[in-house]
Length: 544
Image (cartoon, rainbow, N blue to C red; front, side, top):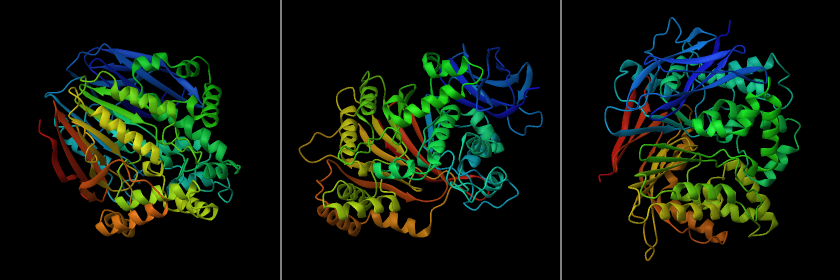
């Protein structure tokens, strides 16, 4: 009899449809049955000996909430008979006109409940507990996870013991994951956490990768990539990482219409085992980043979310570095400017912050200039070492891309049909803050309020010296030091300036953006040792 190995994950949801992702123990028919009578089912597909299904549920009644169950070959598999959580639901409407977007990044899998947690309480566990305690109360309309959903290069003690039973950890990549099967171990460890499993079954989610989904510093530079390709383990890690991301995260990001039109999804489902087709896709994506498109768009009423791939879509040539290759940036621009006036809030999701503490920003653009050869080959070699050691590879390390994004945000936020806000949602840096750009005198400022909203980690840690460094990075002294670095690198002044308007905040945390019409409020909540979330900051972004 087929069993539910992982999931269900409620991924896409709109006014009349939803998608539900599952992994099963064997080939079977997966079916979602809703309490309102709506049903949908599909056969599982196979990748590397694992069986998955993404059930597209259509014909739901707009403006309703309905519980659902999952059946495998006609036998109920979800919820478990001993579940302590409320029923999982699909919501196609709300009691008010608000849209709530919760977001964050960087989540280590929580240890078993009877073991101490070395990085403190998990913010997603705490969110799940709050919703479960009051299922009719406030909950996010979507959970946006901005990268590092799994850590392929920083595994738990339990996972390392499991890896040691498979292979010799004395050989590279040691205690890191090496292949597809080992990636599935990471997803099971992370998503079988009881609170997380239930939360993801009842709150829709959007996801994008960051570096630790593959390896720290993924695609930092051309030299870094060449070094990795020279190892005998990187190719399998990369292909397995992309394949497992496509299965576990990317498919659920897509709308039912996009799924129906996706040739790779059709090819994988059309054969008894889709491993070869998916592997060929990953190989092509490695050889030519323009062959794969990981970015996507989601609309929630009059809120538009554009999730941008700021890892795999890079151009790494030192003389032409770009965070997004030309085709990818053209897509982002097209989506941001599509049908002006049709949305009130534009959200750009990018795992890496656009606006950083001033010293960090200047250090990254100075380092980019050194690596480009602005101060000669010796400085270029130093710059490459520094870039890898200090993780200097955010938008600031791609100066032309930084300016292109600034120009796009201003354009999207200007004019008589401009949205009320243009917000960049990011994670990665293991703390939270709000930063607001300013355009130079004589340059028209956008009509929308433009902000960088950064929230990280969901469940991780940051050393005390790093906290001190981030705090210092916003100071006047740090800004003066940064300007000296920029002059040494012969860097032009950025096209925008900015100031920190909130934070920095540290701890395991989540931000929630709540919009009603053209008004927007932001709330930052931190996980407490007692399993609850406490509000650290709440403020109005607009009052229109």
